[in-house]
Length: 461
Image (cartoon, rainbow, N blue to C red; front, side, top):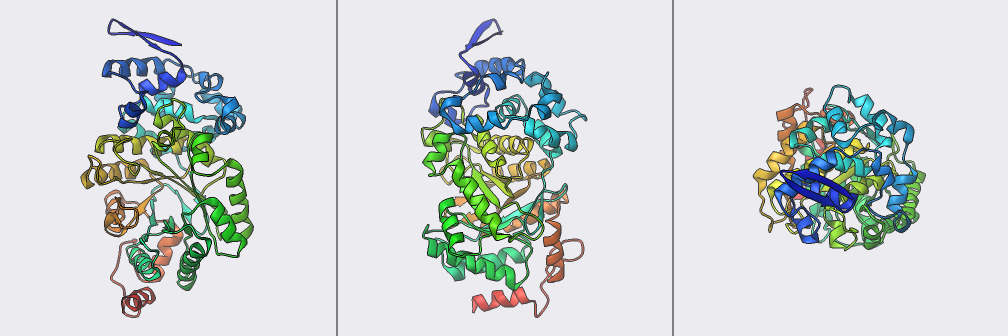
């Protein structure tokens, strides 16, 4: 039990789970779950109590019982006490101050990451301002590789997302070429399929692989289907680059996705066996989102941001190429408006990067949320300044298959231009070689006879 007096009032928090929930910045999902602070005063009191809590307490008190949850067991059993030692004496508040100091260099943060539990990182995020989340995350450098190098300082990649509501090959191919001509796709060319049928998935994999091989593009493809479907596709000889799976922060929420930790291990091993990477072997792609545990009634009474951060411990175990928080996708029941979406996106990115993950963000909202594209512009710029690993590139920022609003090919151009961010170096060299950018990386009009342009014209014919 945790107690504190603030403003002449005594506040009591029954356990660490309750304290973390009450200290969380307000959001609709925690109100829906009945775990959030009931007033601004209680929220501030919880933050004060949390700031004075020793980081070591998170190793002694689990928010989800060890005996009931394999994610908790993963967190505790893989904790690196030697890596934790430099900050083991600190409180949460002292840890915040250290993160914002010059002592928290990129090298120091990389060495510290295995020693941090997700609950520690979630806790410190709750007492930080938005600008704190930007500044600290910017110093965390996480580099991953498959056919190109992702996460270098001063770089920002983009996923080319050519979804189609009927998996029409021509429609998907047209969006692919469109995105490539705008310089998107260095993170991954990733399709959310309309079907989970292995044969249909294989057709999409083969189509993307044909384009990548035909134009010798230094990128990777992925069909965002269930891990077991991808494993079967690999067994049948499909050209799989990355294995995808949505994951959550408790065993129960992963069960709601039909996935176990052993399945993720099997999927990674299957992809590694293909040896399709050219510069590295990070073969996993994970997506997460605040609210998924609550929607599955699998949150164990925790706030949604703490559970979200626990999902990053799952991702970390399998050395992914990409991790993506689809921040506003679930809807206003969990993140009500633009303010809550912006805050959640910054929290997720910060927490993932501190835990050593290549953290991207689908900067998005649903049409029934109290948000608009101006809110997404704010989050886009803040994440760009924070060193986000990758964002989404979707035709017109409007996904016609999933029916939500995200970021466009033009948005990626804008934030790169505004903040001086580069694409993955191998991808930039390819764009120059094919005549789509100049030596400074800026888009150039395609020359007559450009192979990619001719391919696009053939699709349109």
